[in-house]
Length: 77
Image 1 (cartoon, rainbow, N blue to C red):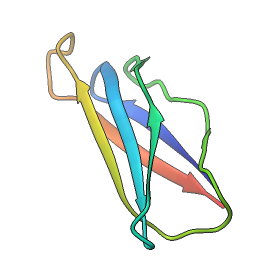
Image 2: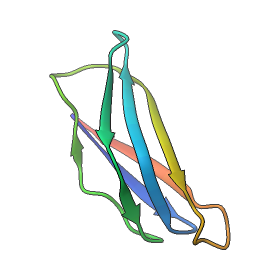
Image 3: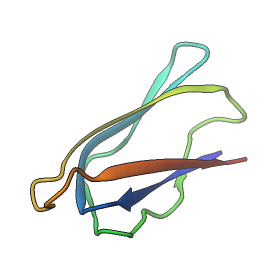
């Protein structure tokens, strides 16, 4: 029903975020969002009812981080 992103090892600027489902449809979720080191997004609701998520795509930048940042993605039912 929803996903959340957490930044590890650096600050992340999310430029694009999408979710692809088992039935082949895709939802674009976020235009731009900045997540500080150790920070997280709010829960981002997914459209529709229960569906199988097969891929989450993230395009972003870690320019202001000394090290490559890591983004962990969490889901909830």
